[in-house]
Amino acid sequence: MIPIAKPLINEESLRLVQAYIKSNLKNIKRGIKHCSKKVHTSNSGLLVLAGDTTPMDLITHLPAICESKGIEYVFVKSMCDLKVASPESDYVSCVFIDESNAKELFKL
Image: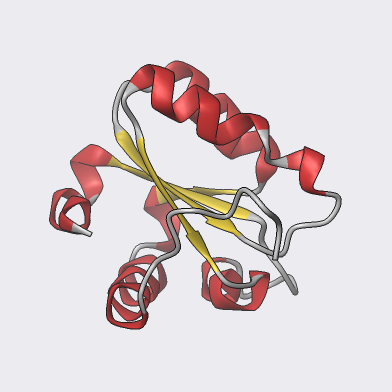
């Protein structure tokens, strides 16, 4: 677990996020490159980051950008928790959910 992995999502909220991601695969952005671009261009949304991403420098800039833009972000324990976001590959380091697609998830 990387040292900056706070706030960590609880199990109930993780199940909600995973269910949403699984049912809306076409409406989310996954991967560091796509999430970084979306965080830079968007003013709202939910960024879900994996707490065991190595090297951690790949994602350490994203929480700071989210805080400056007012975008919510949470960490999950491992990349395996985000595997539902990309069934065709093994692991995903981050997932971005747009506000218009996931207003109910912002209560986490």
